[in-house]
Every structure is written in structure tokens, then in C-alpha cells.
Length: 171
Image (tube, rainbow, N blue to C red):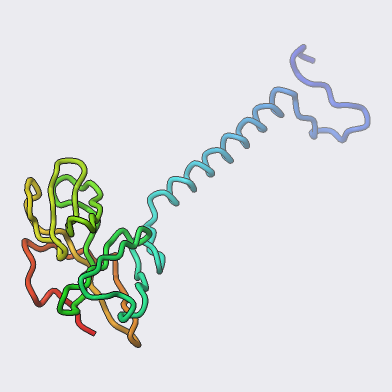
């Protein structure tokens, strides 16, 4: 017999022996396969769309219409929008994303305007550009009313050049 061939143990049936090298190679291959499957699963979860009700990319329930006074702006951080109520009672769901380079705008109640911290764009209560470099008004999201409650669909951003009265939703 050759020197490198493993010898079967006396109590083991013939043909069932595995060398240490084969055992380690089989174990390393199994661990590599498990790692590959985990990496693939994480990549699929990362790339999968996240459309959950109540969060960005889904339908957000803003609450009853009467809880928002005319002329008010309420931020919905999870939905990434502001719900603005015009002085005449109409509603508009305004995106937090600046139309210049996509920075997150914030509402400054004292100045009654949205301000972009990146490049100084300002927008009024209904999202119209007051101070460039933003090229157009803030995007909006569709609002529906069900049983007096406002529902905002953040999966459907609507681009607009400027404000038009028909963009407001009335209850």
C-alpha cells in the first residue's frame, strides 16, 4: 500500500473513512456556503423596497382634519413631509426634500417659511420658492380624506413648478 493513503480503522466498515484534510475542506466549504447565503440575504433585504403603512414610502395617517388650525405647518418625520394648512382651510402635504440638491428643509415658524440649510433656498407655507437657488416649488404628496382623517401617500411624489390653488385638498 502507498504511504499517503489512509488506513481504515479496524472497527470502522471499509470505505467510510475521511481524512483530516477532507474533513477540514468539507467544513470550510460549508462555512463559506453559509457566509455566501447570509451575504446574499442581506443584499436582497437592502435592495427590497420598504413600503410600510405609516412610514415613508407608504400611506401615513396624519389624523383628523380639525386638529390642524388654518395657517399651521406640522412636521411628520417618519413620513418625511410637512402637512401645511392654508389660511382658507386647504391642506397640502409638502416634501422635506429641497428641489435644489435634495437637502432636508425645516420649518421656521417665526419667519413663516421653509429654509434649506445647504444653499439658502427659502419656501413659503405652500412650498413656493421665495429665495433661489432652488429651481421650483417643493414636491407634494397626494392627500385623501377618509372619515374625516387625512391620509398622505408618500410613495407618490408630485413634482410642480409652482403653487396652483387646485393642489389644495379641502375636507
